[in-house]
Image 1 (cartoon, one colour):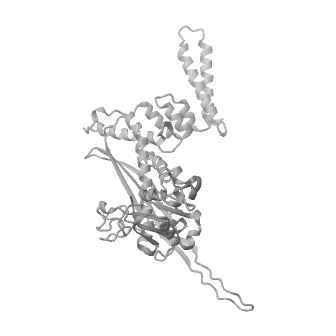
Image 2 (cartoon, rainbow, N blue to C red):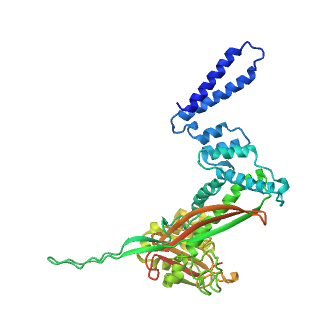
Image 3 (tube, rainbow, N blue to C red):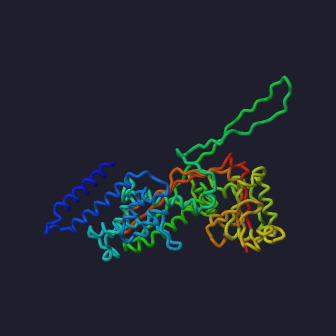
Length: 465
């Protein structure tokens, strides 16, 4: 048994002896002694639990679960749900441990400002975090070496990073590589081997096997969120899941944005995302490395783009786009079609998928949705923008009326992360605001020489109704 267990047993023995010696003493406070003994027995049970082997499904095996069971405060139900399932749910509202830790962090920051004499909007109503919130946060951090502020970036960042991938369509589907260096040269194996007819007694011509590589250079994506110190404990906790959900949606969309639209061109009339002006230097799409998927078939190998001619999307256009992939079109399991929202609606109405006689029970006229086209998974993405006839986006939004669509073999692309999600929180004493900065470093690279690559194609200049 542990030293803690031996101490508890000695305490119980001491209390028991005291009760025996004073049981006939009228001045002896039996009620107080019973309370001490009850607490000692509770300590004994906890000490015994610490010595029990971990069993699958055993509630007391996990220290946070055991602490949650003993917690009797205001957030008991929330803590029990988090300890058992990782979240506490009310309808579609989900509270996680990082939300409670972050809420306490925000309140503590506001209280600290008020204690230093700062007067700001809502300062009169600022109160310290309740004992209940302090206790539940202590419970959630009990099994870690760090507590408090340092868990805000690490705890919430880890959960949000997973949420980003869960919600993204394009980025989560591409082959992903952690980048040990920046830039990182990813070896892609050996080139093609040449086969020849053999002649008895003669050596054949050897193949000089050149190796290929793809270079990943990361670009940082940063978002800043500010809010004032007008904080109430219940309101902060209630809004934390909404803030986390908004960040997850935005972060996932930004991952897909970068994969599809990254372009390193910083000059006027050259960037596919701002074709008639010079991009601001902090534009999210200004990649420090390779360009994205849309750039490949619009600029790098423009012959891979089918010109829609300002006509409505048709099955003939779709066939032409797929034919441009050559041998890469044969690997249907790795092909992905990515239309914008409006182009997806046009796809749903295509003759070959709309009616039962052409598409069977999966016809869009029955189901109202389209998951595959000719067996190829469809990933409708808001990140695929409308543009002009050349597929590029211009500064005047009213000019961007034509649809764009792409298809690619996912093995032709690699996605790298030099750094996962990082969350940093600070204060601005001039504006009396809390500042949260969220960032990650992402890189995308195409397989092979981009000017000749055939693994990606698209359709531009699609008329949208």
